[in-house]
Length: 530
Image 1 (cartoon, rainbow, N blue to C red):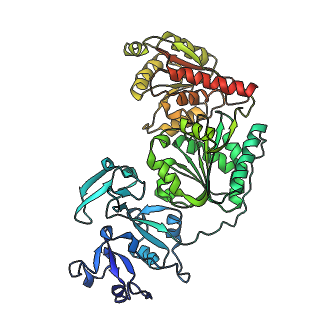
Image 2 (image 1 turned 30 degrees about the vertical axis):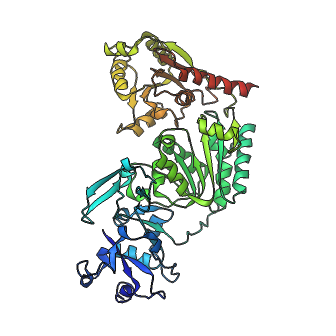
Image 3 (image 1 turned 120 degrees about the vertical axis):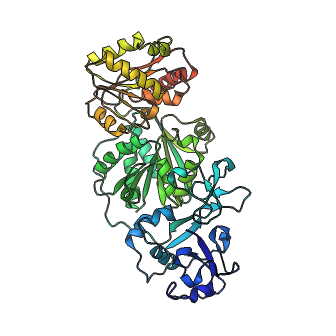
């Protein structure tokens, strides 16, 4: 699909295509090639009057004001409101002529996929301007060598001839008055955080940010409820972004139960096309899905802000910034803030509140460091390290559920075969990021149908099981950072009926990350006890 810029006189010469006229004769209009009448083909139009959109300076683009007498298509409005989508995505559901009819009536605007005004191209969807993350292809649409962005390719290809679409019409107000059905009570520390958040939202005059630094199991979701309720009453759409799909799937039923007359929808890889473009009041999304939003959310909540991939991927941080409105609040949630966040807190550049107590009033389980020698060599000989075998036997005999972490998928698969041989009577599953049945296996474990779940770091966050014991095999591996080990330990003892739990790091040599993780938990417990 090529787009062209046409002079005003050309538009008025084709009333069937543009059944109205504009007063300004010098304005320019953007016309999709497929909308041009056959008599106005690209072969008989002079370059001075008709040129490619990708070659046309965006500062001269003209779009009319919203025509209030025009009735917009509801399906198109729902799909585009708050979003920045590829034309390729939209035309799969909406005819191209209807799309451009909305453009002509001011409800949709086109935007170039790539910006070439600087020395290096910039992707207008993900903000990428790294020359190494752009490629070239022979384009079937513009018939030229076309540059495309590789940084956000998984969301659909953005090329130099790709338009992006935004909705410019007003968003309808939701008439339903939100009702919060959650009737639990907050601890004094939770209430302190809750009041802090409400105060931050009440002072919106520009873009603001704040941090909730709370231990694993502090009840961060419950602290958010009064903030969410206040935002819903103000008719604010709310974005809750999280790095992992597992966390999205856990949050959705909790939010639906707490706000029963509110639209709560999840957005993550693998959902249906219909669900992907649904409108909502609370959007629970993986950080990658936020790339599809633009200037829409007055309240953005980022769960586990220190987690991969958000902290390592500039395009996700760019997406969060673009998704916010000019007057908005971003709330960062984490138990393990990065050095950058700690520095901002120390320099009083970031408002924050610290919650050192778990919601049930018990301290965090402190990990044990257990040396097991060269465990990789033992696995290669189809043997489990004896200390790990003993640890597993003890908890399985006590009818406990166990979450066992591994540094890599290949290591986990080797261990899985051995464990299933040693513990034949036990139900054992294994999950990792690309596992096809990952959600089903996690749900079986959550429901108590699986006794032992083997996992990579994919489940270091976002899973809450009533009474589980936690262990790490190969805790010395570099993938297990201080933050990762603290988060893993935080999976244990989350229930008031089983607040202690057993956390063990099995290793072939202590690392600084392991020691720092243990000290981190001890410091939080010391703060809580004092």
